Length: 307
Image 1 (cartoon, rainbow, N blue to C red):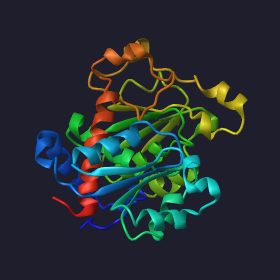
Image 2 (tube, rainbow, N blue to C red):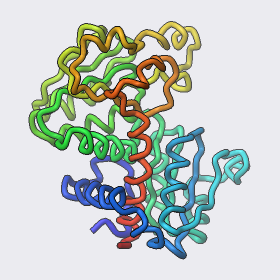
Image 3 (tube, helix red, strand yellow):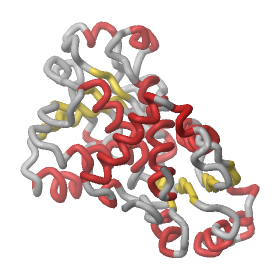
């Protein structure tokens, strides 16, 4: 049972719990009206200490479409955080008014601290470069809807693999399935962290290669997961400017890819996918964004123990 639990790390969910959430999300997609009153009388608190569009809006839309209500902030300076209030005190206060909390924070581990001080479920909506489990659920639902399986897929991940929390979470989740392999495409400065390679890939005996060439890697991929180089993770502006446009997916590069390739992106994009790619049937990143709302509807219902 997921009722009352918090979701901080993708590994907090067993494979069977993941499947429960995805099955319910698919049911919601098939008949959303059936679920439109499930959360009547329930309140979702959104605590966003960091800018967000898709994640915050999709959580708010999810709760409203379930018949619930939303309170919260999207700018920490408008809250008591600006006065120096601790996360522990904030969460203890917020739980007096709400039934479930969603938190995004620039510091790794902040949502974990919140969950340890809360008596209601806390959902991590992204903490620094660490984890983004609901984006992972979104990615998994998208992969299952377009591929029909999680097994025997060759997944290319391109861009910022060092700071990309969506990347780290996706690798952890997909590593549970047989026959999965990875191609990591990044400059030297943004390579996948060693702890991910050691603790997840090497430990699980999962095949992977590292390269800095997108064009030569695209030909046999089943999924290409593009990511932006994140300005907010750099201390040095010159390093960001040097690396930000190092990979750009365009129609010319796609000529070398399979017709069955699926192009994903957690969004927002900057320049890493040319707008000309949007009209390609293989581009599914806006569909992916919509699936995010449905999977968050499912997660809210599961953590609140509602049907």
